[in-house]
Length: 463
Image (cartoon, rainbow, N blue to C red; front, side, top):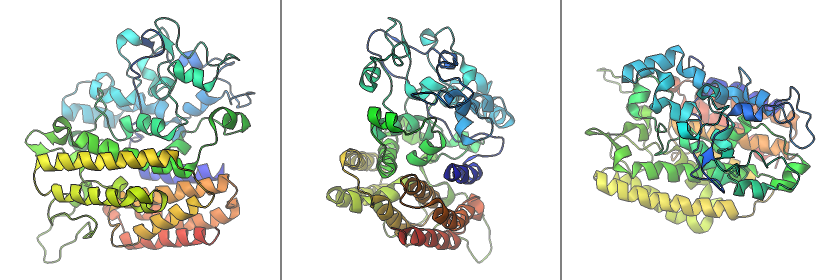
């Protein structure tokens, strides 16, 4: 599709660092399946030509070429299959050597996200770590010690989506479930090997960023056809985007509230903070160059490193339009959290818990509310309005804003609300916005705001 091609081009520049490594990748370890202990059967168990290993996507129910998409060697759709191989590359070796991890291909700190890191006792006969982030990383362990896993039953005619879920399949068609699977590595979790520390980034690991609907588009291995809709209902891009933002805030605050993650020795765990507030050119000249702007919605004492609040900003911006009953409480909790950061660690952790609770309430509300045909237009206008105001000031938030507008524009094209021709004209401004955030050290706020405002205005006139 033309819109996916444009996304691939922009996101490969923005998210793929030198050496071919993408951002940290998602994995999940289900605690149990319906009967017995879970068994990870491996990618090969899904790769038969009558299953998901066809060369062409011409299956009657599902495409059946999903493995080929997962293995694509150069596009983001194949990033999960390349995740393990990245560890053996120059960057992976350098990071592991700097941190004293030994070989990156055997280090738990790396394998938690660069492979389906199942315990050895739960690995089936066809399982191999070198598959990288395989099918079961996101869909859940497919087998069981009792033989009752979803692999053996999910293709049979009596099976339903509900029965597959009961057998251990992860319900990725629901925004909250998908967000939390992806967040395990695209933000971090308390599971083994799924937290990227500041030390890892200092050693060369890419900066972490997350946006559920866009990442879902890049990793989509299926068609949303009549059969899909009948079994799982039609996904709504605004719902996935908004719930993804809420779950990202809940995950960030949940980890920050735990002392074992919030600190690294005597220092705060700087992973949680806005990189660009500290990483800037240092000069003794008379003219300073600030890489941030004062933000009236973020009451932080000057000189204190701010929490990386890219998801907080976007969630707060949209809450008023989509869930007005929760918006004021969320904004208050966000301000209280920022203020507490200048107090002490205990106060900050307590405030993080409060903010996480408000984000959870928003996630629940955003998951269950109805969505109208004009919601995408409204959300784009809100994002652009915030992104071009004094309350939306930083590089990380700007990256989130352009990703959101891009993915929601794609949704409008898919739904037939905007023609491909009209979208192509708008993409020139989106390309300018991407260009302004392509290189963090060359971030150009004025160019970004101008481009995003022009793109959003053009989209709004089509509504």
